[in-house]
Length: 384
Image 1 (cartoon, rainbow, N blue to C red):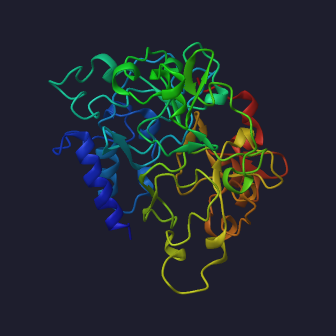
Image 2 (cartoon, helix red, strand yellow; image 1 turned 45 degrees about the horizontal axis):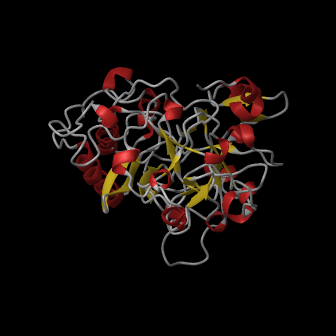
């Protein structure tokens, strides 16, 4: 059975931020690119859902997305967008000291995330208003230590506690081909808006150098060792945005019965299934051995581990910079005690070439079946 409480929560929040309780697009075909939402999200495998209410939920959460003219969908290759894309739920952003719901994959690709969402400014009849000014400008979250474009990324105000690989979360309009018209007037605490060393260094996320203020990382403080127990092994880092409040629905029972997980599930090394997955809930002990194991989502093209990462069944269409996102226990020093018996369609569970190539996510190496990206495609992928 689907998690009714999780569905009710996300339905409520999605209707609030959609600003339209009539849901005019609720009957559109989710696999139709003309349904009014992004193609990546339209690829969500609706056929796996056990409850028609979930199809309505998918529409209500995604149908209010707004296309934005952007040079790059996943950001400039010299400053790519970060975070998990095409996930299913709600993140709660801090705006003017209040909390407001946005799609759970906010900032994971270039689009006008604020259009018809940002309160009091970006709706019809407001100023600058829907489809106007900064409301219509595309932006995404970026890694400040992997951003080499003329415009400097800025520390996030929506999710002030969020981290990406241990760093403060940054956003960029420039990587999406847009001009930042928002920060100067709407983000007073932004490091770039501090004009003295005193006001700059009063913010622990900021640093003063060369007569100007910026986020610590963009001012040159990108060094330091990451804790592998939190962010994954050095050759296979976790890829999500951690400490992002909200909720997502995951196909945790493999039968389409969606379960509510935190919005940052898989963003860092944790035993995310404990007290969340159906087999891992309740007071009875011991639970299934895999419940206690830590894992996170990883980039399959940047993961050098003995045990290859696997394509996700919880979020079957989750993307990272346009590639399928994978999960890994090994990078978190965990044991994968789950895949063999709980993920029948996992590429590693296909024992013949015939079974392997029948799965569009898999590739045959000549001796074994792996996710396509791991098997062969990473070197040839272009997502921008």
